[in-house]
Image (cartoon, rainbow, N blue to C red):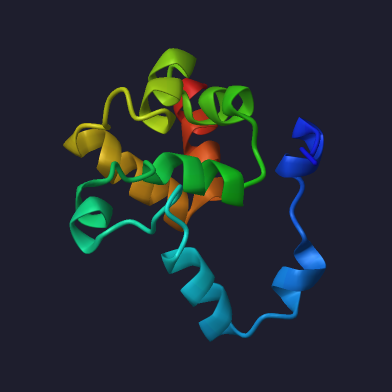
Length: 113
C-alpha cells in the first residue's frame, strides 16, 4: 500500500530521540539521498557572514541594525545572503560593533550632532 505524500514527509522524532549518537550517525551515513558533507565540501562551503551572527545576537531586525549602525540596508542584505562580503574597513567596523554595540551606536549619535 502506497503512503500518502504527507506521511512520507513526517519524521519519527521519538524514534530518533531514542537512538544513541552512534546509531544516529550510522543512519545519517547510510542515507543515500542525503549523504553527509565531506571535509572538502565543508571547507569550500560559503561561510555565513559574521554580520548576521552579530545582528541576531543583538536581537535586531535587518532594518534596525542598518539604521542603528548606518549601514545601507541593501548592503547589509547582500552581506547576509552571501552576495558580497564586507571589505576590510567594514570588517573592522563590524568587530567594533560586536565588541561594544551600545558604545558604537552612541558614538554615531554623538558624531551626527
